Length: 229
Image (cartoon, rainbow, N blue to C red):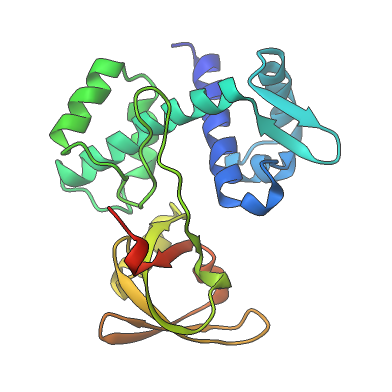
């Protein structure tokens, strides 16, 4: 695979991730948000967007942003499939921590064939979700649709919630969340939400936690009774 092709696939995957994390934007992603995520200049993003648009993999709407076409979305999901399978392999088979695998998976998955991807999936136990809770797309590009919500937008309720996924890949944040017990599959109650984006008080199993609004934006939850993993 050429370096340019690998870069294009990375862009598609990151656009998909941004779109998935900002559903209120109706599928559109801003070029500035993409540049910030990839830590590249605005001109570099614009050049790649032009290439992807010429390949009919995305559409660029002035004043709205960019969104993937059907072909672009399928390609992005296949990139994420390989990446998330590698993450699962590194954690489930090789014993890495969930905070250690993102960059490694980026490097390994960039040149993986489908037979190798399948073999890794088999050795990892055919996981449906990556260690961070994100769904792993199938070989045909289809993926489980998530119906979760941001913890930062939750209301206080006695109903038990379950963490579905954690959206950060920052190692320090992941280690901190693990220390608090805030990992996919953990159940919690939202006890109190302070106004004006203030802290949120949680009951995690039998322990009490207080986390900031910014951290709560990185955690997705859904009612525990609706979770089927």
